[in-house]
Length: 526
Image (cartoon, rainbow, N blue to C red):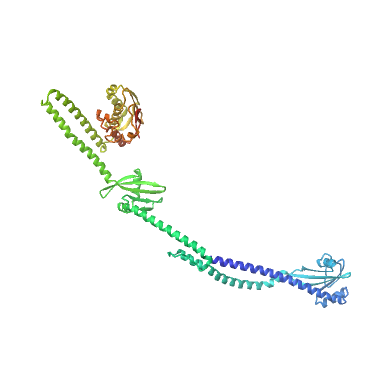
């Protein structure tokens, strides 16, 4: 800024001085011309002293005027006598025209070689007397001034630079002082000894205070974010679009040693963005998500969840084991009855109840064991003919269908094959069809449709309320409690179907309206 002020001041000063020089030279030139006019008027007095208007008089008058050119002309501008060879007629000359019109005239004309001629003419009766002297041209006058102008410009430039330097220093020094105070960490308000700068000082002080407050809030927010991130039990790592690490909290740093290599990240992404990893006997879920061009890795400790799942399966196994004890007692009691300790009527009634309950317990145990074993079933699938399995399953349920006078509609495409195992597909089909029969109305309708893409089982039974629809796949949950226990309805059938579909990669959908009916759809995602 100081340099600009110096250059601007110098430029203004030099331009002003140059203009002044040109104007002064022009004024000097005009004064010179006026001075020549006055001199020529004085010279004209010589003619009035008795000079004759002929060649002799012209030469005499020129000698007396130290060689000035003298010309005598008539009123038409014709030359009567001239000390220098000239035109025959000067009627068009400016000074001649003025003299004829006003009695006298004056003009200056270029005579070449940076020299002008000043002409003065006066009328005496029928004779026009003209005297001419050489005068310097305007450029010649200006040329005389050039050396002086150059020196003046040099001196002016030096003085201007010195003055401008002192002036700018005087002006900028308080501003520089205010700038340094604004940039300092001092909490004092910025002031100035110059009243003109006080408004600016107040504005800078307010801005500094506001900026300090914003920085403080940003620092507090950054500290809070760091505290929250480092207090989380979950690990978080963020990379930018170029793969550079942007953030890692303490939990992630402790688990990964500070970073993951690119191969590990690629493996997680290849696995759908999710992977499980065991670190120090703890199991963690690694999940990668994308936010714009950035990648975010969330590391969650799922050890307790996984253990809970295992405990749940163990619990089911334990419950099954414990249920065998009353079953053994029931069978023992049946044997006691069979030994003859009770009369015939009581024996017959007790025997029927004991056997019925034994079958229910055995069926429940079988269902629980089957459900528990699904997760640990790692036997490979093979291609099976679903069309044949479905046809055979429907034949098995024909007695139950006939007992409830149900109208059965089947549309089964032949040769539909899927990758699974016979017992698993048979469970899916058996549970869906048996539920359609169990929860149907007397004289209702069941529709079974099979294509290469899906299996659809519909009924016109009691339907499922929207509230219950969210829970029908939970274990031991039954929609109609009055049906619980009849024909093996323990609330595990749909849970088993759901689990088998998930394991096989099928999509299980359900649509239902209470009092209208229910439709289950299994989509084979091939």
